[in-house]
Length: 488
Image (tube, rainbow, N blue to C red):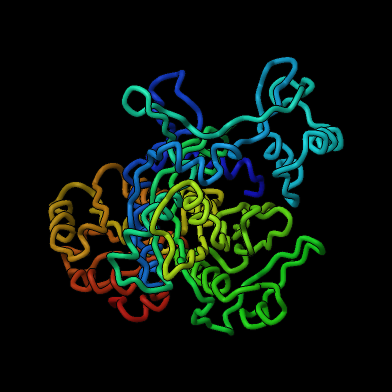
């Protein structure tokens, strides 16, 4: 399956049919775009991803918080969002369809960053690429600013906003966490939570929403002194010559490609996480930002994931310096100085829903007979499935007893509905790699069939080894498992 749109469409078909994710309020025809719900399978995958992310946080001696999604007006004034948080929209003169200009241009040329240009520059690009309305083919009109924060009233007349980025809660809670947990730097504070942006034209399912999860790690520090694996390698994209070069942390620092130890530390940690959950090395690159980085950032990298012939931003890594806490202080916040100094902040901000979708996309497989997800067992919704061959002759009773007695019961899918072939397909379509089948030979000799989704290879093992097999399957290849466990 080579066509990108076809692959997205097939992924969405499976997501809807298996209840992985789906439109919010879908039972009403006039539901609002940009809002999606996770179903039971999706929640299991999402929770497994976040558990792996938390392991990364804990490896950094990090602390996790959960902040309010409603922020008072003063916070967004201090952060600069109230004044600067907007997108540029353009409307079709004929049908009135509205588009976000920079994203419209990125669809034509994904190698460029079109954020923050002047109206004149945007118009020049629209002419250059001969962009028309995708709905009616009409001419596009004037460009306007569009504020992207959701405002609300608290009580009768208190102005507030839904937070446009989750990290503000971490900055707001820093003083309390620092005082309670040891008063030592560096201090790593993390959070998973919802953020809200009134996107002009949300699209691409989970990749651009109005309500979305972010998982953020903020490193508060006063000295750029971090333990580094100098031989660890990353791939850095040079936008000038379009090359992607693999380079060690040591060399990247010595050549000035990476300017600070905290940046090297942060981006190394997040790449370890991405590889652990199942992305391939060749799917990950770091794009160094220059004039397109945020005005307050001392150094910025975007971590991008390859999605067939394009790259999608997944993680923003920014050395925010003193900007955030200093901005709060200017608007009246107290107690943010430690020994007279404002701490600096390095940010690792990841779009959680993007992570979820891009991992599904990366693990999606299709051949002439079937579609399935080849998922890392660490994030798969279930470690295994147990099926009776048929629901009669006591096979279902025996299979159910195995399921109930397994130490992995909470991570096993049990099903006896439909033919065994259809049950295999349903399990494959949600990323379950291993399936055990209780059949008539089980009654005779106590063995069960074990089948792998990727290769469709199968062999028999003693049912007494089921729990050990599941445990080993998370770190051992199927061929090696066969050598260890096959019954003859």
